[in-house]
Image (cartoon, rainbow, N blue to C red; front, side, top):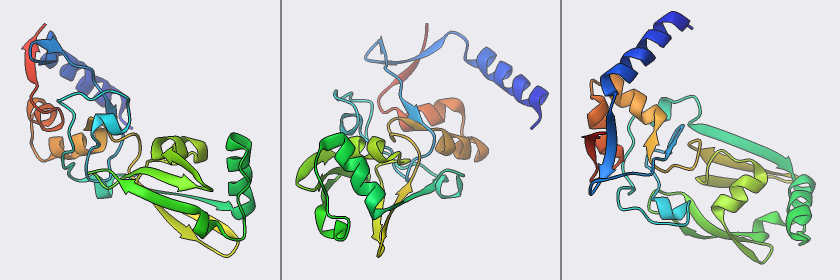
Amino acid sequence: QDFEGNLKKIQQAVQQTKGKIMTYKGKPIEVFYHSTSNGKTEEVSEVFSNALPYYTTVDSMGEENAPMYEGSVTLKNSEFTEIFYSRYGIRLDPDNLASQIKVNSYTESGRIRDLTVGGKKMRATEFRLLYGLNSTDITFVFGKDSITMKTKGFGHGVGMSQSGANYMAKQGYSYKDILLHYYKGVEISEY
């Protein structure tokens, strides 16, 4: 990579936005962002405990070409069940995983909200962390002796997608256009 060129871009961006902050109803916002969405951003209360009005589900363009758009984790059934047992003390049947994993609901963005594994109901965010998955947009593929968990997106999905923002910038959108797309109802204010 061109270190000097990238450094100049960063310095220019800092100078052009110096003294500017995002506010909602006159107060600075809490800022969340992530690497790559699944094509839509996630509403904040699906991931974090509080709801914030400027975080809604919005379309995020150009994600399907991002390097981290698709991910996959494959485990032997025995590995999957051991990880689950070590965390929850519940023994799953490694010969019958498909019948022990049930998706209960999805969020508006198409990610899993919650699921039941071996009778234990849990948030998908907890499941994602347990198995080191890239996101909660998970598709399960059950093999004879293995389970594959395919994901779309990378990160929690809340706020601005860095890949989506990069795509929008390359399409000619300004930094203000990009921020106002991802953070609804905010204003760019002088600090």
